[in-house]
Amino acid sequence: IARDMLGTRYRYGGASPKGFDCSGLVYYSYRKAGIDVPRTTTEQYRHSQRVKLSQLQPGDLIFFKITRGKLSHVGIYAGGGRFIHAPSGGKRVAYASLGDPYWEAKVIGAGRVQ
Image (cartoon, rainbow, N blue to C red; front, side, top):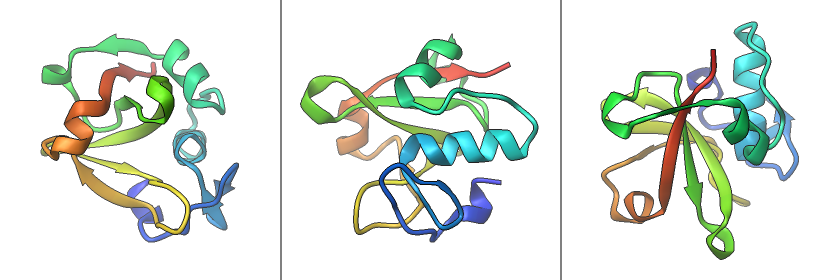
């Protein structure tokens, strides 16, 4: 579902194909798959079961500290070391690599929603 949203514009507070923020993309994708998740990154983190990065499976959530060193970003693991996310204003839903030094330095953990 998230893959089908690739190229969709970023929109702060967005949770529909008209535009997504990071947690809105997770919220929309999971809801379309029939799985209830909270709307915010912090609540998604609390709601998910911790998973080691070495045990990631497609669909798992990856959490990052970007803004002022606090939990502030989430993506959906797509396999092969890549994740799908809604990056920031002016950008579009896209793939990113966990091997990219920027993301590698900011990842704080991963979670699985049951």
